[in-house]
Image 1 (spheres, one colour):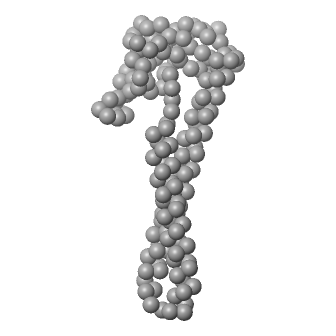
Image 2 (cartoon, helix red, strand yellow):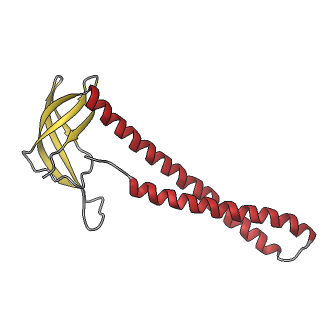
Image 3 (cartoon, helix red, strand yellow):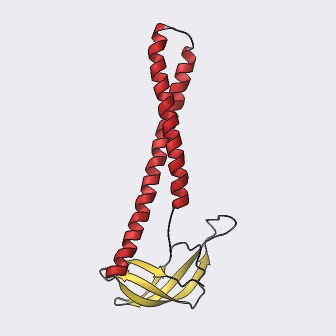
Length: 163
């Protein structure tokens, strides 16, 4: 099961880069023209328009770049947790007990599914919830494998079999 926000990272990264460059150029243009405007008082209105647009675009671009970095960090953390669980975690068998379609998200007329999996851990029987699944389509009663951290059972990864 792969979680990747590559589409979001691409969109926010491109928007951030473009907005930052455009905002920085317009702001720099407004500042350099302000020095020239002191000598020649022609087109003074254009100077403030460049400055205002630059002041709007530059922070938006920086915000988009920050969102891109946060998404990349979340993906990296998720991948690191999965690697840690593969290395140090315990593996148990589980069974899909419920599958729900998540209608709050819809992309290309498709909605992801969320599966609830019941498995037996040392602390007892636990029901775990999967993240949104786009590629896997589990059915009730399917056998799955659950990787979990014995020190913190809230850290887990459910591995679904591809059909």
